[in-house]
Length: 326
Picture (spheres, rainbow, N blue to C red):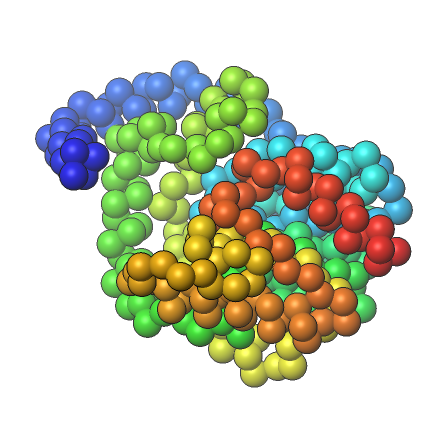
C-alpha cells in the first residue's frame, strides 16, 4: 500500500513539474548525447535506414539474438548472456528499427517485414545461415515466422520466456493500450523520468558507462512509433503463425514459472487471478517442445528478464543443448 501511494505521488509530482523537467531533460540529453553517438557495434544500411548491429565471438555456428518488445538496447540487454557464449559461437545482435542505436523509421512494423530486415542485415554482413535464433519475449514470434518461412535457415530456436503462437491470447484492447501506453511512455521520455526506471539487474551486470548509455537510450527510444506499431501488429502475427504448421526445429525453451509450479507440476497453493494463464503459458511451451525434433523446456523463477540474472546458468544450458545438437 505504501509503495502504491509513493508511486502515485511520484507520478503526480512529475505531472505538476513536467514543464521544468522537460527543459532540464532537454539540457541533460544534449550534454549526454556523446554517450550514445559512438556505435556499440557497427552501423549498416538496411532498406535505406541505419541499423545498429553487434558482431562478436568466434566459432562456426551463429547465434542471432532477437529482443523482447521495447527492450531499449538489445546489445546491452543481451550482453551478460552473450558474453558467456562468445568463446564458442559467433554472436550477432541486430537492433531492429526503433531499438538501441538504430534509426526510428516511423513506418508500419509488421513481423514479416522485421524478419526480412534481419535477413537483409545478415546478408550485408555476409553472415550465412543456418542461424540459431535466441529470442526473448515477443520476438518469439519473429523466430517462429523465420523458422516457418525459411526452415533451412534456422538451425535451432532458443526461447527466453518467449511468446509462442500456440499459447492462448489474453483479450486485451490493443488499440486502447497503444494510445494509453504510448502517451504515458512519451511523457516519461520527454520529462526524463525514464532515467529512474528499474533496470532489472542490468545495473549490476553492466559497467557504469554502459548503464549511462542505457539510460540515455531509454530517453531516446521509450514510447517511439516503431515499437508501438510492432505491438499493434502482434495479434496479426499471432494469427499468421497459427495459420501455418508449427516449427519443428530443435528448441530449448527457458520459461518463467511461478514459485508454485515445480518442474512441470503445479503444487497446492492459494489460487490467484493469473493462475490459469500462467499454466497455459507453460503448457504451450511444453507442447511446442514436444512437437520439435528435439525439444527441451527449462523452468526458471527469476522473472521474464531471467537473462539479466541467471545468465551464467543459462549459458551453460545453451552450450550443453547445442553441443548435443552438433
